Image 1 (cartoon, one colour):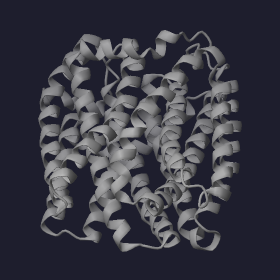
Image 2 (tube, helix red, strand yellow):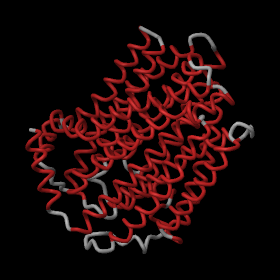
Image 3 (tube, one colour):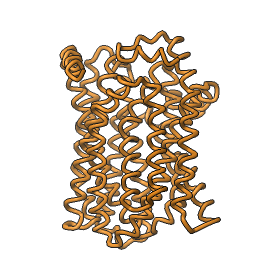
Length: 440
């Protein structure tokens, strides 16, 4: 089976023109560099934030981040059609360089800087990856996306491993704050390869023209209207929200334990580097092979159902054996699955949709889910903190079990509308996915 898969990949790659190959290489380099930067900045931001504010302040800052992030996304959507992809990305890269340079030297002496860095690292990675994926969607056709998207995500996983190793190896030697200096050449690398990708895509005849992009292509209210009138999109939104709310709740649990176990900031940063290094190595295997094998062997519907079932079993394990190693296992598992298998099978849900749903509705779901999930998780944690401070981690785990059960129910109903969309669009699937029809 693997040999057949590699043969397909080789034949697929040989069918690409020279501009297509160069475009793919440039976008993969961008994905690699951005995730490497994110791994470094995340370890620094989380560690410094815990030192400055403690884990109990996470729910509050998550609530603060929602309106700020949505405002920045609105700004991005409004000015992207006016200035173009290259100028907007260069602008964000310049802002990132200034913030990281300033934080590298003054993070420990200015009280509000840890909060700024923590808020910035979330919105930056989402905006940059949204721009990368938008260009990919407008350049790579659907038949090739089924092969390439897993590799885009997998190459990004390799970048995360490298970034995590930088944090793990040099946090104590350089100091947590000075690690941010290593991100400066990464930003320059992303800008160069992104501009090369935009240049070479003009020679690809099957590309969509993004120079005539209108404001409506990223219109927020238009996307919400599409979701409101489509039950299939509503269930996709529920599935994405379930994953992101669960991830944020586990993130809070993990931070509580991390704060107790590692009181020294540089040691905590070092541990985060090694921890996410292991998680990202697991990501790579799942991104390159896990998603393909899972869908090929079980089908898309069973793959979507198996994910929350596996996470619920993992959650029960922590309830029965509450400890820091078990918490690391639970949190590492959901982070690995979020950026690998879930990302791949989630993207496959959008394939049978109409073009405007792929752009407008998808942008709302991806941005809204990530932002709103933090608010939902924050409200839940704050309510628990109001009523009890004892065994808080256990009550959060009970809430997670309820989320996973609701997630599985949503999947059962979602695929009824998924097959309807397949029939309406008359999508021709590869042989590995034709067996999905038997689960209808």
